[in-house]
Length: 65
Image 1 (cartoon, rainbow, N blue to C red):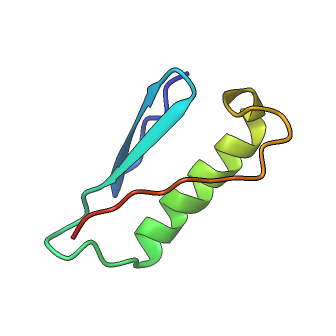
Image 2 (tube, helix red, strand yellow):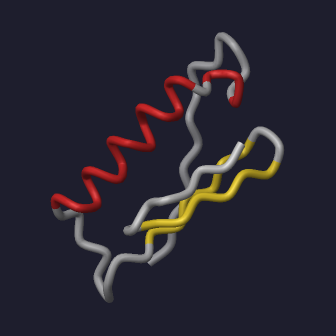
Image 3 (cartoon, helix red, strand yellow):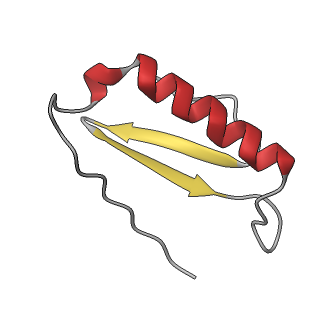
C-alpha cells in the first residue's frame, strides 16, 4: 500500500513497518501544513488497519536530531 502525496514528509513501507521521514525545511517545524499531513496519514492508517497486528497496543518511534 502506497502512502504518497504528503508535502512535509515521506512514508515508505517495508512489510508491516511504515517509516515516516520528516523533511520540511531546515528545522522541520510542526506548522499547519505538517499537522494537516499528519492528520491525513493518521486517518489513512486508521482505514488501513490491516497494516498492523490486531490487538497491538504498542507503537514504536525512532528519531534523530
